[in-house]
Length: 240
Ligand code: BT5
Image (cartoon, rainbow, N blue to C red; front, side, top):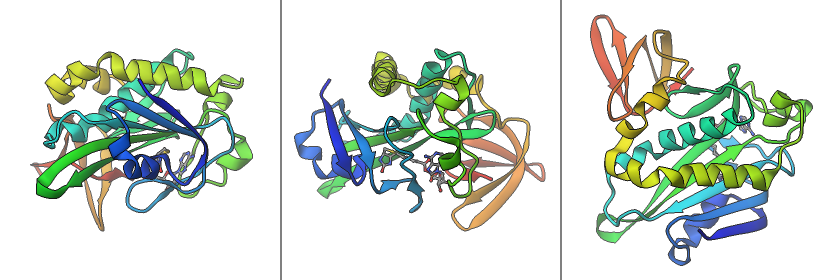
């Protein structure tokens, strides 16, 4: 596994996209400082100082895009939960891939496919930010979300490189199984950590809000929402 450490970068995802031709399948790019970290839909990811994880995994499974690549974020959320549990804390997953501790956001995942002419897929950039060593006063400044950090949850500092190695080992341990079986290979592990099923939810889908009872998750990782006796099957959205 190639691991590339950057002292400072705008975004590990942007860097990985820019250098995708030179990065081999399975490369891991991480940065000590990330100046313009990106979330989904033009949101940003806040750098809470040295010792936090900003990482992108570069994957080149095939030059044809397969639908299961969209579930890589859910696969990574399960891997992250397993690693966090080794610190004796109990994370939960909010569909599709938010990882929370006691309802507070500790990590964010951003997956981007890099396509080229002829519908060919050059690769998938799977980015993740995890708050490992943050100050409560900085967490309080994060817009729109209540956030936490591993050091605050376990009351001690966390080794960045140790955490990175645990997470990438966990990721690659079952990656080939995930590629052949898709979301189904992690469905049970995903569901046992969920905090959304059986609840009435408001879900933002671009500029629209749907609401209903979260009934189940399909074998493809979609959320089934029950609304006026009708089932809505959602592939994207943000639980509000
Ligand atoms: C995400 O977006 O949660 C995906 C974030 C992915 C960040 C990684 S870091 C390495 C790689 N390189 C990048 O440039 N990005 C990836 P989204 O679901 O859109 O959530 C964004 C929202 O999370 C923001 O609008 C804030 O409310 C909140 N947020 C921002 N920074 C945070 C932090 N450090 N901790 C907790 N919440 C945060």
